[in-house]
Image 1: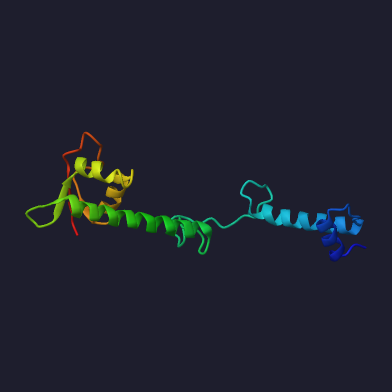
Image 2: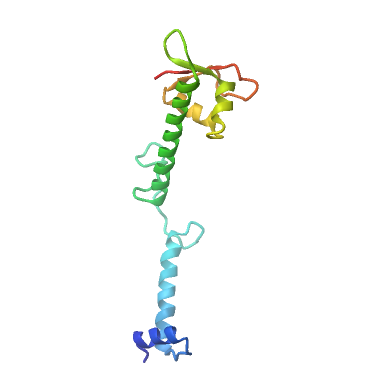
Length: 156
């Protein structure tokens, strides 16, 4: 019979170790049980236990499980985008000109040329800021060149 101390000693000295059939059997059984447990969560396995699929409208639909890495990554991405939206509003305040209502505004071409050195996602960030009610501009999408003279107004 081989003990844990003997196994550890073999690993340290790198000498060939004598392993018992019982030890091999136990290791194989542990690997087998671990693999079966893994396959229960593998979406491509035929042995996968059927999980309850949420339907549209149910609580939790379209959201990652609480406490999961996916939820954590989503929160990190959301906070990163929020920081970019704040930075965009600051840039509009800095380079924009005050209009009749006292709020700063800037043409898209000017903003694009200035902001592209900060981030290459200026249009996506503008769309996000508009969705949050922070900026206003005409049109559904802004295209460099074609929409250079579209006025982007800061609302808050």
